[in-house]
Image: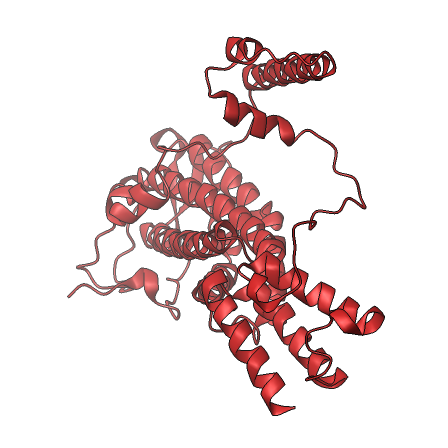
Length: 378
């Protein structure tokens, strides 16, 4: 079985040996430019490591609270792969190899051996594999936290997690594409370089692929080179102009509706002329543009009783009003006769955390069971 040299941590580089060749037999302009561009590109990826440092801080702060969440475990895998990528230090490898490539201004030039180029190509294989690992793990983690946000929980921390992971995912995807392109460009020069004899570095049965994307296989096509979705926001001038026109149309509709309300005349035709959607749907969208007063009361229909607790919002209102009644109006309080202040405080603090982590159905069951448990023990 062929050994996976790209996955070897202790892979020893071959001794750097050079040989002289006439300049006309090997044009170094393209070769040198390819290496210098690659060094500059990987050296400028400071933003990537800043995002990785942010993931490190998130893991440190939430390692106890979120350790059982699958998305958090995938985030830790993303961080571990990013650390391996940093320790690989591809910039130093490329700079060391580039230092042995002489400038193309002499009649005879010095070039490194084929074994030295093979070492760089093997390291690029490892870089691409590690970056794909970062891409897949960050994608799984972000999808997990997006699922929690869609279910109506984990808004604040979930948004921070997803935004950080998305940045790491996007930059890893871009770097992986560049690493594949760099490998393919350098691979073309392999046959032009001379192989040093009596230099047994790796096994003879190790063959480097012609195209790195073919060697990576489905992982590269599915997770890196997949162009079936758009990863950019409104960046085109046409998109921005269309968005402005739509917003102007919505503003005109709102003005017309306000005028019609004052005259007690509502014309549904004005809406359908602009948007081919149902009137009920448009009315819901227009409601979003109405200002919400800071002190506006949104719980007029709430009745303070255990039977009215049927949703997450009811749990929040119950805790809020019960705490208020215990201090200001004890006659309306439900728990003041059965729960002491310390027990009520423990119960309230417990549910502040549960509201962020638990789904609605198990949360309601947990609420009623624990409230009865607290009240029966007092």
